Amino acid sequence: MQLSSPEVPESVFTYSAPKLKFGPGAIAEIGHDVAALGARSVLVITDPQLVTTGHPERVAQALRSAGLRVEVHDSAAVEPSDASLATAVERAKGVAPVDAVVAVGGGSSIDTAKAVSLLLSNAGELMDYVNAPVGGGRAPQHPVLPVIAVPTTTGTGSESTTICVLDVLAAKVKTGISHERLRPVLAVVDPDLTATQPPGVTAAAGMDILCHALESWTARPYTSYEHKTPEQRVPYCGANPIADMYSERAMRLLAGAFRSAVAGDEDARTDMALAATFAGMGFGNAGVHVPHANAYPVAGRVHDLGSDFRPDGYGASEAMVPHGMAVASTAPAAFAMTFEANPQRHLSAAAWLDPQGLDAAVPEPDRLSAVLRRLMRDIGQPSGLAEIGYTDADVDGIVSGTMQQQRLLATAPREVTEEDIAGVIRASMHHW
Image (cartoon, rainbow, N blue to C red; front, side, top):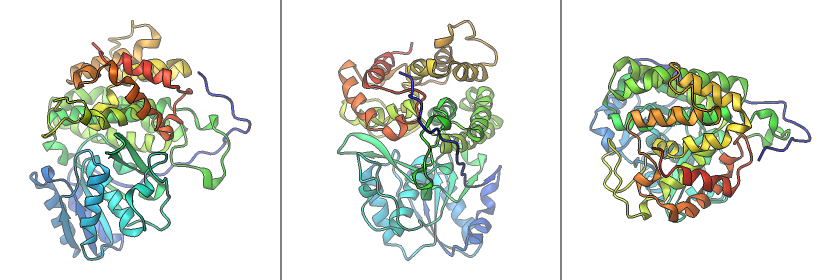
């Protein structure tokens, strides 16, 4: 179903990004950078598993060398929930007043830092700020504490975005908090920190990069929306020339680096870190759509399946689906469904991701899907939702969870119905 034409089309798009420092060894300069923000007391947020790598303490020492007071909390949980974020916030409230929050880790640590920053500076409870209809959808009334993001995985792009993603346990759905004030003020991207990233994490997180770029590139154009007033504009404004540039560059980098990075190639890790940054700059403004909307219930409902699915590299003590893996799980079918909305964009993306033309003979509507399936199989992603533990009996529940993600579905290049999503979920049970 195509989008209806607006009576008064939008003529304005916006673009925002954090200040960026990129390159091997970049974290050695973080003390200078954070002190320059005017901070004197800093809370470093990371997760217990990452503490064992020594990266958080290296960051803390670099901050202390600039004369800053530093406390390190390992309060981030892998795939944060409303419960884990509330615990992290309460723990942070026990610290003397801080001027800035530094996140060291993947998207889980960065999103935890965003929640802590928000609730140390604004009244209310976490669920007050979670996107409607799951939560209250409240906007922060006051500036939040500055967040400085130090990603140690190549994937989430959370260092570039306005979004804090979480599982709402009672609702059995993954959703988020989204507001411009949550965007980090500085991203310090040091590819050396990804050397400890296991291959399974590189693969899953890399699929998140890829879907960020693909969904941003294929998002509905900003001109397809109704014209908005300044106060109505949201960070996700649709495909636009600047986001397009970053998304294309991310896909071209991924085409040459992804498989090699999973295999452990050092130069490829640097390209993956740069691709993650570029993709974040793209989707952090254009937006994402169907695969990400599906990912929230796919990840959120796995706890109730009785599944013993444990992804490689995550050290999970219970069934879980990493965010990037959840996004990728329905991507081939989702892009087949959106193809007719903009065939040329789908075909261009397929060509960039498959420069050797291995899938060039596949019929056009299925070509991008074929490229994705080949890549997913090469890097060891699940063969479909069935491998995770889902069955046809779970389709309605996933559809219900997806349809709650209207903030994301509004960015899709065509109108999306429950029937559309059900078809995508059923087609994603088995990719090969």
